[in-house]
Image (cartoon, rainbow, N blue to C red; front, side, top):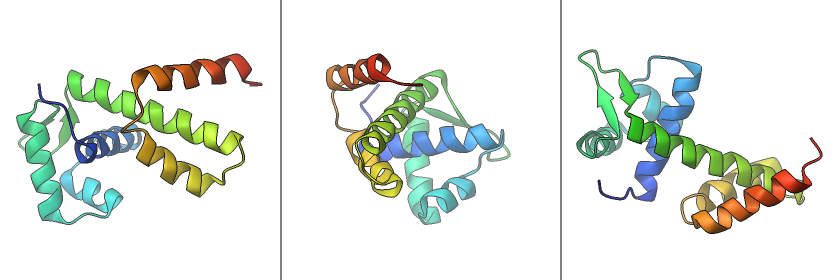
Length: 125
């Protein structure tokens, strides 16, 4: 299976987040959430279908495959952990979420795991 580009990861993360709110996710929901046009969403979903990350049923409902869900969960975890880290060091919520969204796609597993371990070790929760 080919590696996903940042945009593909963003779509998977969006599907994952929307699926937490509703069991029925359609292309229009994804487009509205991301602010993308129908043709852009259609093209991206076609690529995710081809790569085996999503399934679409006869009614147009989109679900993540096991591979797609694993990738989406990983990206979402990176997003939430990095956002939390940035907020904890004094970055405002909006900027922290935006920056985490950029970094989550490029940070190595080794560095991310070190950050996660550090947060767990020093968490006051």
